[in-house]
Image (cartoon, rainbow over all chains, first blue to last red; front, side, top):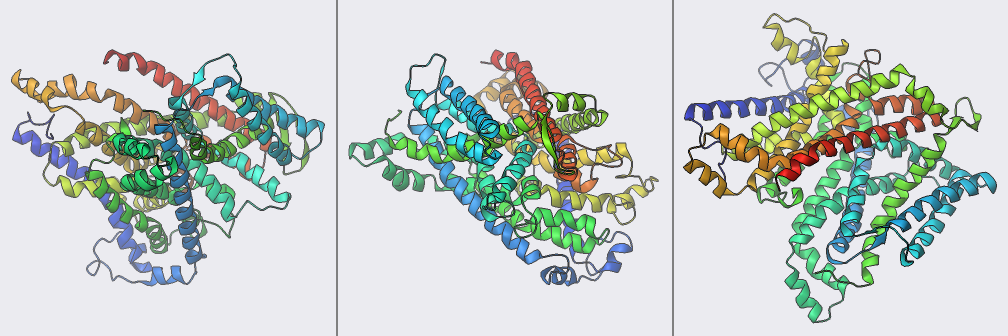
Length: 345
Length: 291
């Protein structure tokens, strides 16, 4: 089924196209090659001008990596561990609860009144202002009080015959995905203020595992729900119907039949989420200081700390890049089986 | 078939709760803060100024500069990403020799941390130790001011964005190309349509909905650009490459001017919404014609 679009071209222009792709490929690969070779250079090998080939142009050394491991340029090992822990747990939690929500959106019917949504927002906003200004609660206290009240009121309001349109599953999905449109700076900054005020109540969220992971889970959920919905839609419904005839409860259908059948999709979603969390910079910049600092923050810091020590910077960048290189290899293998075709429809 | 079973609430509520808590809390918080004059350093008690912060911002040249810079980066970078990405995807789909090998390499950049990519870019663009300048000096262009001249710095940032995110376009367009029906092309072959005609008559229109979605995603994401600029130029020289997110970060995290920053982030949200809605409105007639 492949080969459309260019079949009519002459062999000469086909060759031209191939050269074009090759040039782009070289542009893509050269910087990666450069960072790999630079990481093995000695200081004189860098400062003396660009050198390209190991053993011919310069003598490779492992010194940058040894420095890195010994923590000469900051707590590298510790930070690497942080990134791994936060990345794995955030990706796992997001994939789990996101997959559940996606399944619910595919197989069950939801009806939410727009009026109920408005009730929620107005009560949350109004309740917050009321508690904060009139009753003299602190700002996080007021928010924490207003939130459940608004939520319960909205759930009740959803049962009442309010006027206005009724939203279905598609709209709920759109709401999830639209969270991704938000400029993260809006959330990051407000979350920083909120976390630090909650910290003053005695529960530390800034520079903590819980705070950072929670925020990453929330920001990965839109992608997870979006991707997983397509995978679940591809699961043949007949299997589930057969199970329902036998009176298998819904939760067992999900965990026992649907999840094993869409393992590939879950794995791919998990890896994409992991890549997103691993590379994330802005939230980590706002929400961590030293204890839970992640790799991107440390790598970015290398730049300003000691200007042109490219050999060390390359080694640091390489440590941040290599896990994702491995993932790219794994993912591309999955892509070849047409995994993403469903996701873009 | 849609089922109805109370267990559906158990399935959906965890996700809804987390997203609600992390998006609605901060939204309300910063919306109310944006009407206050509120600083942490020096600590003055909050005072209600209503739209005062917004008015100050709209008169601030630095704010307009940041909007202009961000828009410039986003539109040029996304345009280039789309053009190059579509081209490469077409070539890969036509089974250019060596296509297998290309696929993994072409996928790589989008999975790497933008911060690390920006550091690598700094090395590449370094005037004395970088390979790019050595290469260009062979053509008589010596020591170009890559990151120290405003225009050059912008171009470099755009180049890095294109380098990193073209793979995303390639990936999505490739998936799109694979969904196209074969028989249309066979019919076109019978009519002796040239490859050029086939592209503009069949491939491009049929891929328009996917293209619109891809460009939309990339535009929205590009407006959030921060890490690349943060590492490559820090917004400099001067404020020549300062983007909206970076501006907000400087105001909020360096000066702790809370009310002002909240107002700024809300203006940002409004701007993004306007761009998104305009984009969809402009494209809607084109998309519906095809149905």
